[in-house]
Each structure stands twice: as structure tokens, then as C-alpha cells.
Image 1: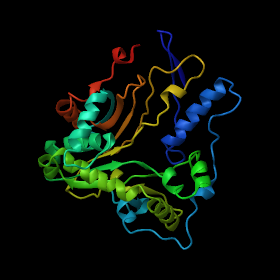
Image 2: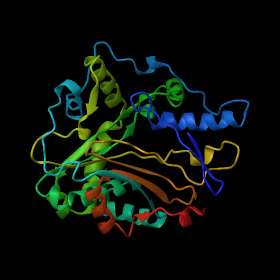
Image 3: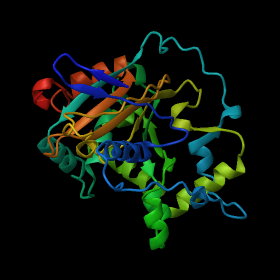
Image 4: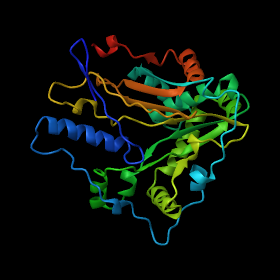
Length: 322
């Protein structure tokens, strides 16, 4: 959809189904679309649709831990009727920016125990501690999931497959998650929460994990399944949950339809569940700042805006220079 603004600008939007394509694939599509619009002689990346790249092993073999991460839809219990339902606490979307120097400071703080953390791990740890500090979360189990792309992992040890996987169009994601008591998250330092996230990612960012996930899906065919972090456990101690998906590969500068580079680009995740979704993306300024899209419960968002106001600033036209 194309919307022309009174100022002369244009907003270009499209939708995609996550059951068919992940954000990595959507990025390839957007760049290819822009290149075709400019009548370029060849696409920078020719997409691969070789589904055989994700073939299961025979016999299938997967670690039982995957049963803790994913669940067939038929095994889901009806959600409990809680007083704090999404009708009372709606899920809303907002966009912020984070300065590069503050990200570096946050990373240093998360690494203060001598264990090096990434900026994503540090930011996710702060987010996790913040949503766990709410009154509604007291005594409950809070969860955070980090989306991991399996393309580079599945291509390990095979240069040819690695090259093809880099152009694979489809869905090659896993969502490992960590869970802790909210009270413990409030009391412990940022580095402790970052350690838990780091350990969670280490277990999933491997070739064996993704090959096992392919085998798990094959073993449960044809029934669809969901990542458990999105549906909770249905128990009384089930607390707040959020999924963080790194959008650092979002190619804002490359999506040029011929009238210049975009002033801004973002994703929108219209999820109706109570698990939040957060995506940090590179700023169009190209200076190391982050643009952070949030789609979470209103109460959690208000808590974040109070406790992390020094870090997350509302995105404005002045910041984007438009």
C-alpha cells in the first residue's frame, strides 16, 4: 500500500505471513522490490526456495528440551480467565530511539562481572528486569525470548550450503527463552539477567539445535505448533513475557525505489496475545543509534517509560530530520 502525505512524502507498506517468511526473507523482498523498481539489470540477492535445505534427518533425532520450547496447538489448554486480561490492559505499539553511547554504557554495565555481553543481550536484560518489576508480576515467573536466525548455523561446515542458506527465502527461526522469578529479577544486578539470556542463546545458536528443530517439526507433522513463550503455561504463577527480535539487519538504506533513501523504516507486529514483541533496528542516521519498536501491554509500556525514560526516548520528526 502506498500513501502520499501532504508534505510530499510517501509511505510504502506491505504485509507478510510469518508462517511463510521471517523478517530476514522480508528484508530480501523489500530490497529486491526496490531494485526492480529502479530497473537494475540484476538483483543483488537471488532468493533460494530450496526446501530440501531444511530436510529432516532419518531417523529423526531431537533433544527433549525442544518440548519445553514448542507445543502442538492441540495440546494447548484454554487460557485462564484472569482479572488482568488484555481487555483491561490492551496491547499497544510505540517506537523509540536509543543513543549509541547509552547502548555502550548499558553493555558495559551488563558485562561488569567480567563476562562480555552483546548490546542486544544487555538491552534485553534491562527490558526483562523492567517488566518483571511491576506489581502484577510480583511472585510470578517472568520470561524473555530471543529470536535466533538459523541460516548461518545450518550452513556451518559446508561453504556451498552456507552460501545458499544466505539467500534462503522462508522461515528459519527459533525462539529460545529464559524464565526467572520476578522477585529474583528485581533483586539481582543487570549482569545476572544478561548472563541468563546469554546462556539461553548459547544453547540455541548451534547447528544441532536447528537440525533438531527441523526433526521436531517433522515428528509432529502435519499439526501446526507454537513457541511456548507466546502462550504461557496456563498456571497461576505465569507472569509477563516478552520476545526480542533483533532487526539490526533491516536494510533501511537499501530500500530505495528511485526517489531517494527512506527517512525511516520499521516493522509492525499485530500480535493479539499478552506476550510482548520488541524489535531494535538500526537508526536511519547510521550513527549507531537504535530505533526500538515495541508492541506490549499498556501497563508494561508505562512502566518502561517511567523506569527507562533516560534510555528510551519517543521517536520524533526532529530526530529523523523530517
